[in-house]
Length: 329
Ligand SMILES: NC(=O)c1ccc[n+]([C@@H]2O[C@H](COP(=O)([O-])OP(=O)(O)OC[C@H]3O[C@@H](n4cnc5c(N)ncnc54)[C@H](OP(=O)(O)O)[C@@H]3O)[C@@H](O)[C@H]2O)c1
Image 1 (cartoon, rainbow, N blue to C red):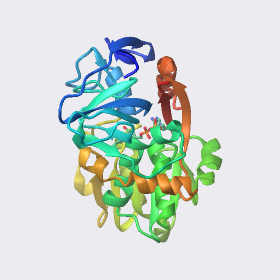
Image 2: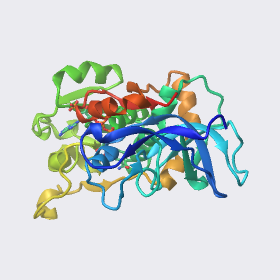
Image 3: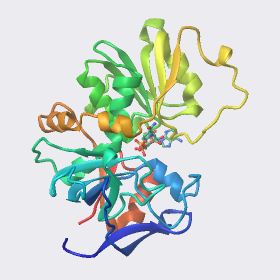
Image 4: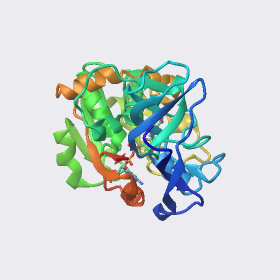
């Protein structure tokens, strides 16, 4: 190991992006059953924004945030991984119950570490965008919604990083995909990444779909509870609506009457990617598809770890148009 200390982003008090401070910390040590990862890049997630704002119950400060990381193995005391192997990790309490990926090194349990075996020329910015984004998008599209060729899919919240990744995956599966944004000027971006239909989300998309056969048999709800009722109305008979995100910031529904809320013959479900889903995500295949140009991936903005407050401000302001990635070197 080159050094005994590392840069880490530590939060000591809740607040705006400015509460995230880069500190010099001892490099953590891995025990048997754990891996020490030299983090090369980490993606930003809205759950980290909520934790920063003090909305994550059970998270004590000070804490190194970060529910994901990408890098190379520095040390695995149990010999499960070789030094130098490229790995990705996510979830399992990272950055919440124990220190996470916003650092130059992180220690995580072996059961949430995915080794990348395919040789790759992709940069750390692209690899660093992948863990949680594809854990969620791949799981939502293939497991929760079970999208197949010929499906008509509506992605509500199309410019989210998860939405853009889901768009690429669904197009690759041969689906007809509609996406949304609150901003009309984002249509071009979404069409560039494969969207067949586009809606400006004014909260009432169902009213814009006149014919029953123009409805969608799969709906990926990323805006969340605030638009869920309208998304259910966008679904065709027998269709599935999966709520995966909550960018709309409304967490619960008061006095919801299911008989009135859910249209007849429409199925409502949810998806959350935990360790099992993460380990099940075919990252080697995804990397090969990205390298071959078959799967388009949208890295939004890239920052250096010293710019962590700026990176969080960008997330707060919804300006990234894709995954925000932070490099640690
Ligand atoms: N279930 C899971 O396992 C899981 C895992 C990861 C993430 N998630 C969730 O998935 C969602 C997407 O995450 P992400 O990191 O991909 O998001 P993101 O990239 O940070 O999303 C940014 C986009 O959200 C849209 N947006 C922001 N506020 C909005 C509002 N009030 N109403 C409607 N749209 C709004 C904006 O789109 P426009 O300005 O273009 O409209 C913006 O471009 C989040 O809710 C996240 O918590 C769930």
